[in-house]
Amino acid sequence: MKLLIALTLLLGMIYCRSASARVAVEDFDNIRLFTLTNKHGLTVKVTNYGAIITSIIMPDRDGQMADVALGYDRVEDYMNAVDKPYLGAIVGRYGNRIARGQFTIGETTYQLAVNNGPNHLHGGIIGFDKVAWDAQPLEGDGECGLQLSYLSQDGEEGYPGNLKVTVTYTLTDTNQLRVDYLATTDKPTHVNLTQHTYFNLKGEGKGDILDHHLTLNAKQFTPVDEGLIPTGELREVAGTPFDFTSAKPIGRDIGQDDQQLQFGGGYDHNFVLAGGDPQDGLPLAARVYEPGSGRVLTIHTSEPGVQFYCGNFLDGRLTGKAGRPYVHRGGFCLETQHYPNSPNQANFPSTLLQPGAEYRTTTTFSFSTD
Ligand code: GLA
Image (cartoon, rainbow, N blue to C red; front, side, top):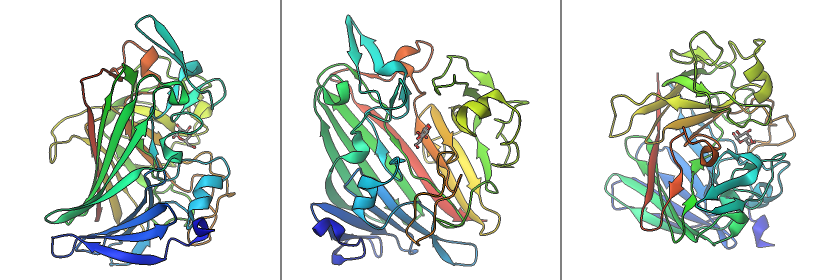
């Protein structure tokens, strides 16, 4: 069937008004694949299945291109993959965990789908990563993009309220991928949207990411219990393996005898972003540098937290686009977000969205070399 059509089948190109930033569209049955290209040749591929980023191709310090985003060649691999680890997807209605899949708004307690031990994870059984979104290519001056929309029905996965969601990916000629999130609801509900791309700045499938140098703009993190639910404490990172306030290889302290690292199987924790001076309107969240290639990923966000997950559940069973296995810790995610289980933690920034209000957040991914 048509779903077997490889992502490489090119049907047409839609050019943006700018000199060279453009969007190409490929058929994927009712699922489509869009290629955003900027004037430097940086390309980002996005499918409207799960609003998934399937590929990000960027140069190294010598101009050698590599695909730095983990993913698959065919849409059915996203649908059928072992454990479906959310490669590249937009995650929602609530990214990360909600304890026992329950929260109370006013007098009503809602029971969500439970899909991670006793807890709710990443929107439930059929979250936003597993649905078809409406997609509209965008044209702009020096940028191009894709606007993706989805209506999450009242009751879907147990959540109250019809939630209208729009996620816009914009690729600029300044080598930045901007992700703008917008949502509105007709009943009070909880929303926490994030982007779940796994990066390997050496190139997808090229071993693990333990030698990447990570800086996080975070002086605190939210420690968790065995089920990865935050305890409610905001703990200082100073003097712990969680201190990434200056650049440090991801693997340097990951083997330390530390209860939090044991619970996560490595890093799988939410960091409390410190804010500070905004760049292009947004404070810094993270910077990752890969010494071999010189590739740099810098992330800015309006969100108060970021989940740093270093691919602890990857185990070599998934095979990537170049036919290479995704080994243990073969990619890292930096999921900008509100903190996990916020609906049940009064001291965490609120994720409650009321009718008449707008949920608006922005995260940027900037690609450069050093
Ligand atoms: C998030 C979670 C991890 C894991 C991955 C997907 O990062 O925090 O525990 O579920 O998604 O595999």
